[in-house]
Length: 71
Image (cartoon, rainbow, N blue to C red):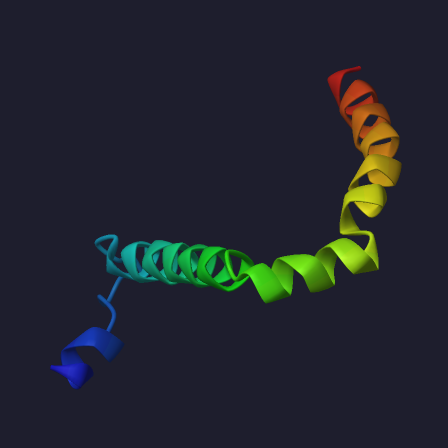
């Protein structure tokens, strides 16, 4: 089974298996981060770091980036 997963097709194209695995891994990371951040102790620690203030400080730069990209 593992050997079949490691092999690719001769012409270099895959049938979406690698993309499926990548998206599954991303989904697991997002789910795990959600589980960690739902812990009240972690939330108190993160609020002490000022992550919300950091996000507010970054928003004008993100908006400026999107304006430049739309030009």
